[in-house]
Image (cartoon, rainbow, N blue to C red; front, side):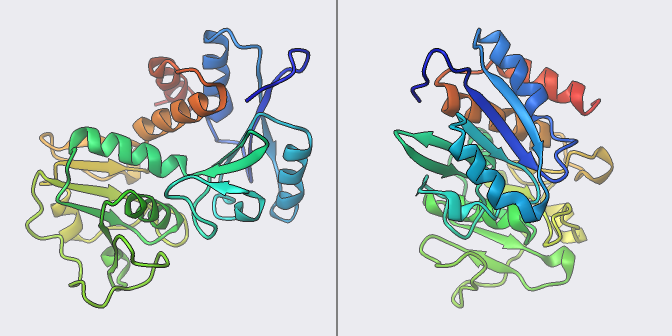
Length: 275
């Protein structure tokens, strides 16, 4: 983006509560490291003020906006263009002006896909465990990039739902797809443990836990070690910290045009969460 040299570019994150979000802490470090005189601020915005806050960000000409819980599925009316895998009804967690147009993106799913496919470049199947906003946003993103996937809610005692390329609305059942089975998981499979409908880490049944021990890659989105999935040593494990670091690095590059040092981001995230 083009910013007048007399104006300090400003980035922000909006959430409720925004406390507990490591983005400002981490991004400030890489901004300094990159020699950029940019500012990053965090705004605690109540749900009834969210739309007004986003309009304010746009009116003030901020260089970019990150969206934190619980607003990741509420940004669509403020987006003028969507990146691939991001739609008006789904997960949108980053917003930035590009040539005068506000572009929304799904950086969570982008980071998950990048990391998972580093471990399994050509997956035979992708299982997403959970039925919450994260799970649906990731499923939509993978489908938009021609990677069919299924997501399971077995641990929640609800029916499995399949999502595939051309399936239509996320969450729509596909009648000609067999019910999801976690049997015969092999190293060509990616398993992603996401969230339940209430936004908390998805609870798992024994078959899902067992399936995660034989996959090629298992992605865990829960930060709390007490709720994390046990993963066998031979499985490539992608942690919630890995995803945060990749997500922050992607956002930094999109916003500034520069690459962030991932080791700096990781150090900041681990320090912030005392990991």
